Image (cartoon, rainbow over all chains, first blue to last red):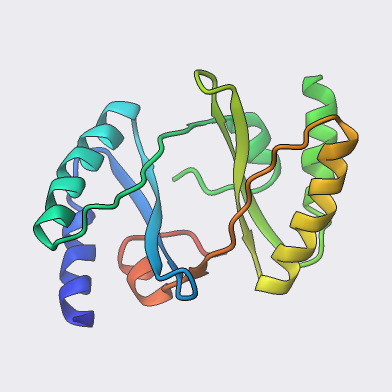
Amino acid sequence: MAESFADLARSINEEEGFIWKIWTENPEAQEAGGIYMFETKETAQKYIDMHSKRLAGFGINEVNAKIFAINSKLTEITKGPLK
Amino acid sequence: MAESFADLARSINEEEGFIWKIWTENPEAQEAGGIYMFETKETAQKYIDMHSKRLAGFGINEVNAKIFAINSKLTEITKGPLK
């Protein structure tokens, strides 16, 4: 299983507009997810559409995703990684 | 207002366990927020408690916060910024 996730991780690097992903886990709530950085709203939305279908193929239908814009001036002050 | 947010941003850099923050905005949903990296769950929780009280002082009572663990092996593959 760990190996197939590593393959998935490597494939994500190839997605259009993809910059980085932090893989998150919440064992207590039995949730797994991620924080993604994409170049544009459009490429992020495209990934959500594709990934939701892929997860449905694994039998996972409950997917929550939200796209945010970034305030880069404030993010720069707090050392937020934008690249 | 922008200047007071910059002051707030600078003060966040001084919080215990703080590593970085990305400032997020969702103008359509009139939501603002952030993705934070902290050294430990405990320092993250301490920040949430303090910041929730601070926001209440600004008249903002609806605060959603969630702490996640990170899968660092997978995050490394996808170039996720952990520092």
